[in-house]
Every structure is written in structure tokens, then in C-alpha cells.
Length: 309
View 1 (cartoon, rainbow, N blue to C red):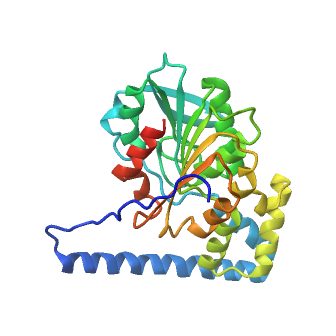
View 2: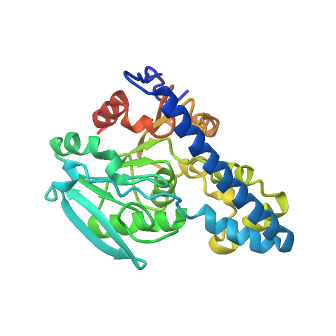
């Protein structure tokens, strides 16, 4: 198998002092509200589907592209110290941050769906100490940037724009949807092994995300067919084209790929297909117990990423 494989120790959380009865009641109420909302959405789509499969697919696609939460938490101190960078992209007001502007060694950090770059504060100081200029932006419809919807082609074009206007960028740290968008961007660029990419639990297969989405909402296969036709009409590609597995064969960068065995958002099974390609420029680190989001906050993972650069 290609590259180096290792399993990082499982992350273990401890609760020192907890009112378990309070937590139990709180979680029960939260789950109850979620069940009510889900039941309402499923009923709404069932009625719409009975009237029109196409309209149900259109509404489903809109929901698929709409983040349901937005991280506008207080800025970590390192972000308060950054140079603020703002620009307009496709009518979106983009908010971002830059450190060490004078350096021509640039790294771009790309967050995932319903996330924000402020979640990656632990990487800023170590990278700037290594002499890198670090660029961080909230994608459209995320964090402090404007907008309500995002799709992977919009995110891809967003990365293209940053590279053209604030680059060139030769280093990337990309999580979840940011990883897929980066793959679709860089496979079109003229690049080589002096480019470095860190994928952290990237969204490898769009079809996997669609499978989960349709299962969650209880949508039928006729709506699925209309949903896929809509994607093809908008993009010119079948959903299976939006794939890191497909793009990987066109990526010449030096790649370090982190994936957790227990990730329920972007499953290891999708990554295993890339591993089997035996690409010499891809190295994989398989963790256990870190899931989809804790993985980029893990001390050993972040150290390995900093060392890679």
C-alpha cells in the first residue's frame, strides 16, 4: 500500500463533575425537538413528492446546499490579531484573515460544511513561525461571510479566485467539503509536487453524501432521479463526477491524507478506494476515535500536519 500508515491513539474524554440527571433531561428534550423538526420536514417532502417529483427534487437540492447552522462565535485571539481581508465574490461579502503577508510561502485553510476557519486557530502560530503566510476565509454562506447556500462548484471557484488574487498558493489544509472543492480546483491548475495538500476527513464522494441525505429525509428513488438530473443540468456532470477518487489521478501535489475509522460523515470505505489506487504522492494516516471534527483538533494530528509543512 502507498505511503505510510499508522493509527493514532484514541482520544479519550473524561467528565470530572457532571449533573447527569440534568444532562439526560437536556439531551432528551433536544432529541425530541429534533425528531419533531425531522418529522415535519419528512411530511412536507412526502406531500410535495406526491404532487411533483421534480419540485420535490428542486426543494431537496436547495436544502442540500443550505447550511443549517453558522459559526459566528467570538474570534479566537489569534484571529483578532490578524490582518482583516474582505472582498466581494459572486455578490457574496467575504470575510477573511491573513498573517505574515510579506512571505511568498502561502498556505490556505479551507473549512467544511457548516463550519468556519476560526475552528482552525491552533494551526496559525506554528505555520507563521515556519515563515508561512496563512490565509483563512469563511466560504459563502458560512461564518461571517454572507449568503445562504453553497455548492461544491461555487466553493471550487471561490478557491480559484483566492489563488488568482491573493496567491499563488502552494500549501493547503482542507477539511470535509473544503477537501472536495480543493480537489476539483487543483486538478485544473498547472501544479506539481512542490504543492502540498493536507486532507482532513474530506468529502470523498458526493454520491455518499446524497445517499445519507435521501435516507435521512426518507425521499424515494423517483425524487432521487430528478435530483440527479437537476445536478447534471446545472453542472454538466453526473453526481459521481464530484469525487476525490476521480480527481486524485489528476493531482500531482504532495498529499497527506487523514481519515478516522469512526467518521460517520465521510466514511473510511470511500477513502479505501483511493488507497487502492496506489498513488505514490498520497500518504495516509488512519486514526481511531476522533470522528469527523475532533480529528483536526487532535494534538498529534495537528503536529503531524505542521511537520508536513
